[in-house]
Length: 203
Image 1: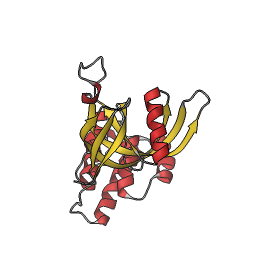
Image 2: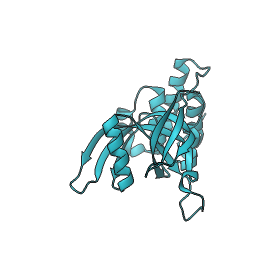
Image 3: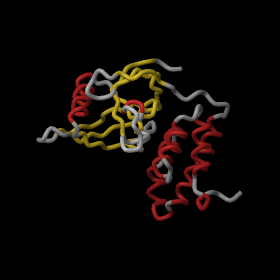
Image 4: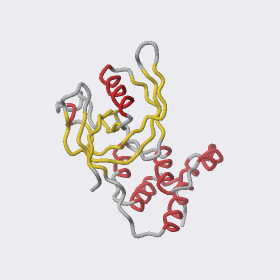
């Protein structure tokens, strides 16, 4: 288990953020404006967690309707608008698991434990090969965008996994399964399983 910290949480419906992924957000609710002011003043990250059920789908309190698996989000750009709302750009950092929720703020906060990927048994060359295999599945799925995908694809297998997760037609549960994989090998293999049949390589 990694180190522990407390972070404010920004729960979003159906969203799973992966390490290295860039995501624009529009911050308009007063509680999240307060959250943004806190992280801008301190320089700390906040956490993105998935809302698993809406209030219409479940009578549980809000904090019991969000996932306990999340990803740190670092603000890379923020533009405040005249009406007090903000447009921000975040990048995904380390994943974490929620240990305990803190309900003392207007926004949700939590004590979290960082959970870096475990060291897997495969050598770097084998992970590279798996990442290339995954990327070729993504290209087959989006043939019209193949050139742009290959131009923009990262070289690091960890970032290839995040890149592929953004382009594959995954359910939120499948994204969370891939994010929660213990090793990078497990994450790549999970994403390969989720590549639609029509885009898989024929062996």
